[in-house]
Image 1 (cartoon, rainbow, N blue to C red):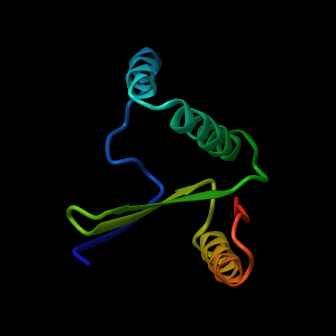
Image 2: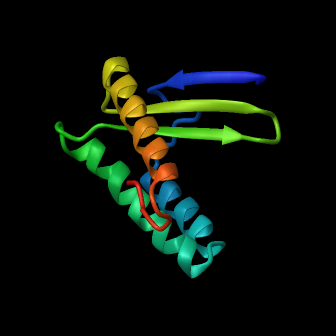
Image 3: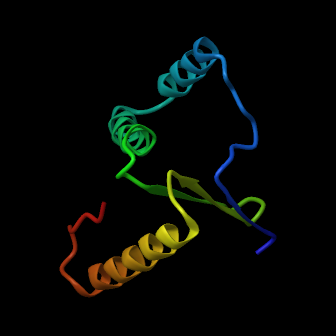
Length: 105
């Protein structure tokens, strides 16, 4: 593994909402209908973490090309992230021993 990053701050800050909308429109235009549906769900979940003090999130991103991994906190402390990651790791292990078709979210 070449790099691991844990951050609550984006590497590039885009404060211009119109530029953000244009960039999201460009990305959405490249997605398949299934990808677009999943992307919308994921964005709604992320947005809820910004809008609700009781919602917390963590994005895990792995890049196979450069073998980097990052964990981005969204309205979450390190302890909350640790608890979430542990819970989901257990859920995924349980999923592997259960019949297929279960969706963990």
